Length: 489
Image 1 (cartoon, rainbow, N blue to C red):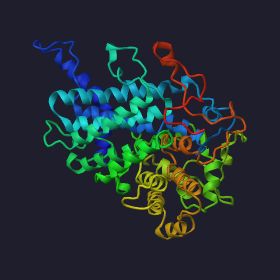
Image 2 (tube, helix red, strand yellow):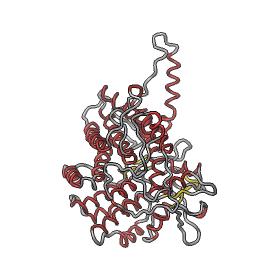
Image 3 (cartoon, rainbow, N blue to C red):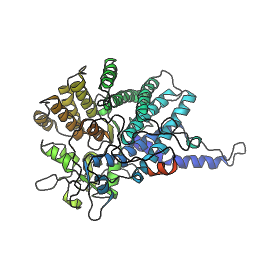
Image 4 (cartoon, helix red, strand yellow):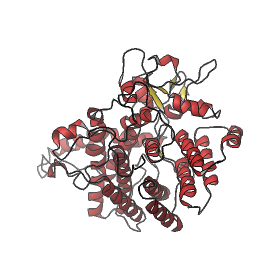
């Protein structure tokens, strides 16, 4: 905890440090007074990982979670933003901030690490940066489709980067994962990350394997996204990776997530949003009904409870705008209660051990990839990982698994079970439930009664800032435009 606070503080004060150093240089007649000092690689990595954590729990997370009816937008009176998003009123202006954070901040930081780390011979830094870059582009492609990639992160060298084909970007980021793994494993590196990453914080010697496991598991996620477009590619790519003995996430301790702490400058973005906009996000009836039908013990961590039955109460788009009527986000996303307030110390989860197991369960069921386990064994392991992560007691885990932990029926019915359990386990996880729905049609989602259109969105509009300032950016005709892998009718 102390280490994380130190890391976070370092990130926040780096600008002050640089300014102080620059001022000192003004009095050195042998130095250029206008020279801009470069932040050291450890500080840039801290900045990148902090911003990735915030990014993954902020705007894009809310949009995808509202579309997928894990959250519902509510208010105590006048129509607010989350209610608009839930009815698919998500405009290009709503993407401006997230796009700017992704490109101007996070990806530029990562590109700086890659460029400088390569020049000085620090592959341990460049490896982590390439893996993080792959994660960021996977998330962005799944939201938008075609994007600036090959000409991006060049600052003043190219103010209007072209938009690359989204499938070509996927090909590139799979290669980035491989490069990242090789570089993280390099025998020699001029500099190695210390405990300056807020994701997998710790010494490089103790966290190197975490980065390798994450990169390989990210590749499995990427391969699975091809399932409807090119099942043969999914099958061969997964088989090759698994049979090569690749390491994957092996427990909840390996989760790709960023921890937050109970401090004003380091609180979880879910809690920060709810604190600033109380009642804007509540439990959605779609997710809650699914959990109610199985007496799911995770409800106690996911949602606030009422004193009388029904203890958990969800809303849906078009319901009366009265937030106190509904259960709100609880400790799983906001951190433990400290008196009447939340600590804000819950992690932002981005790729989990539970998801890994559900990926393997689907791969075993649909593509016969059973090395290391069956669809059933991975399915049960995914549920168990999620229950454990939510703090469910062992006896309640056993009860739940006995009732809901066995695959039954046809392959389609079993796939439905896998994706629905993955959907429950992915509460608060950016993008992936929306991607699963676009791939498989599960879970069943009905547009809200007040939706602006009658179909669930397949992607987001490009940022209005891009349309205004980049002549290579062309706005979509609707939210029904699909990414390359989204071929399900």
